[in-house]
Image (cartoon, rainbow over all chains, first blue to last red; front, side, top):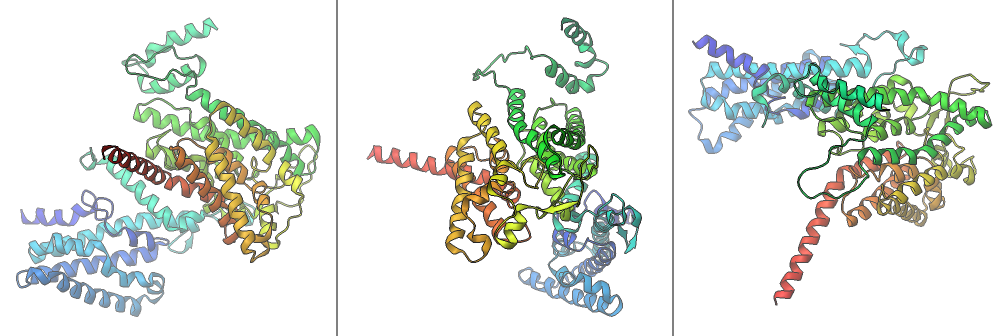
Length: 210
Length: 380
């Protein structure tokens, strides 16, 4: 019983309760860091770590905090975790950390984290909250990877920085192809999110609004 | 003719409800009404009787576009050193693949959506499909035209619910997509000349600076004002000739399809902004005569065919004045102040498309308030 329920915390946010395309949280960072795949994956992992541990910590503290000051406690916990993640990225993947620039620090404002702490961790046991954090982080990363895959492939013809579309296709080398500059701009990411939502809802009838 | 009628009647049951191919019903309906005037009449409710249905409206706009289209054909040949009928036929052959691409891609998507949603195929794309090649440079690769058209039909129109529901002008969405995605060739500074060496065309360079670019960098252009008015300048296919566009404008206004309020106020807005820049006069571009703005680039084309789109422009009469005036002003402002966008018409119309409902809302609210006040005064 309990393991089935725990599994649901992990898999639910992947599709039926996805933080980005169903709860519409964390849209801004999914537009900002998805120009290339590598930073998108690092960002997804960072958010997953922060969500999981802030859920865990807040769930442990939930009985000791007066509800009047819970927001400020949440902020302290989340901010501490974000700083740890930021320092970690700077130490081990410096180039990606440079590319992500302010968006690592801005994880603190990512609505998914606050949303999950408020909606889940404050009312559930630590282990379940931790799994819920991991699940939501995975759901977020999943969408980020899809967007970044499309944007990097069509926007710069690369995947993980490796040229995928043959050089000989490009107009500069006598071919016909040109990279789609719109893919590098945030509006196209928003349109891709819209398309994912469109496809997702047409397969999940219970999500469709009347 | 009656043979065709009989044939259509014979295959009709196959496509109607319960028939074998009923899922193609709206496709069949579209072709039937394309061939014959529909004989269905409305049965209830009050209706305005008018022979001007959507098909006829759209065809009128297409006729109004023809002068600019035909001149575009000639100018395409003219720019590669041809003259007379040769130039015209060269341009016609050059543009036809683009027109065909835009129609085939756009109509395929329209029919697909109509089938999936089980509603009728609308005629809106007749105009859009012709506008798209006319607002792109003549050598735009066909796959870019196809991609832009597909994007415009899906995201400019169908996601909002199809013809009549769209917030943005679909043809401009197509251009905006190609503009932002493939900037170097579309930006309005440099446009491609035709690159086909046939009928003795002399292809020197692949692209050339437009009048807008020359005005922007030096404040003067290498074309005479008469040439710019008549349209013998490089630019997108249909936008160069202000004269041909004005002929189209006369057709639109005479038939009452387009609103003279919008059209006029776009030109007035452009002129006023030009005069304001004359007063400032900080750069050479600001000092050019205000009227010169109106005959170069896509200003006239946008004013006549794009801003007046009845779906995306403001609906109220006062709103139309405000909407048009802002379109004109913003277009010139973008051109002069922002060097990254030499042509501001597309962006200003799209921007005002987004604001049009707000303008209408304010106009309607103001009207309600005024009438309320009148009632209050009468009661006293």
